[in-house]
Amino acid sequence: MLPASRIVVSRRPPDRVAPFEICEHKGIGHPDSLCDGVAEAVSRALCRAYIRAYGAVQHYNVDKALLVGGQSEPGFGGGRLIVPPRMIVCGRATALPDMEMDELVRGAARGYLTSALHCEPGLFAIESMVRSGSPNLQRVVPSDATPRANDTSFGTGFAPYTTLERFVLRAAEVLRSSAFRARFAAAGDDFKIMGARAGDEQRLTIAIAFVASAVGSASA
Image 1 (tube, rainbow, N blue to C red):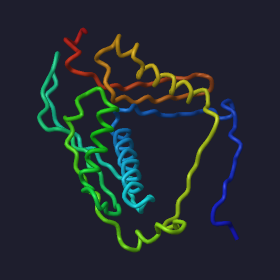
Image 2 (cartoon, rainbow, N blue to C red):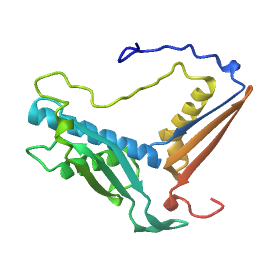
Image 3 (tube, rainbow, N blue to C red):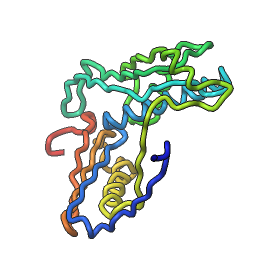
Image 4 (cartoon, one colour):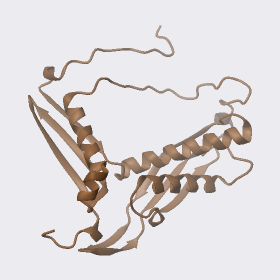
């Protein structure tokens, strides 16, 4: 019979064994990255609030976030925002006795967007859809005993990075660097890098959003 939990280690083959390899990296302003970052910020804020209120972390699940794209009229040298993007955070969480859950969620989300992006975070409309969890789920995290499992889960990891993965991550470091941004003021926070290797040949494809106010013309 298999144990309830276990760790299995498998030796990763060297780069030269695989004839073809692809990997992808999304920048901090990519919608997927923003959703992950906001959900993580809300999770940390909940843990801090639970420790203050109850002395221990209570049951919660706030791993779902949705970024609804807005609408704009971009133009050379500027533009205007017609409909703001909307960040929706949803999940289940044990109630807090000293503050509104929606207030905590919106504050944590706004704080993350402020720290992560170069644009004005007030442009985002933030909506909390975090609701109270069922009594059965709340009881799996008792305040006076070891928390019990209420689901099945698994995780995977790998090390070390391949040559292609290091290549992609290095490119991402360049795009985030102050030197790059000083030279290319039009570079936005939303970018995605796809790396591909066929044999010994490596290639990067980079998609990056432009900031309209920093692009004066098509030739620029």
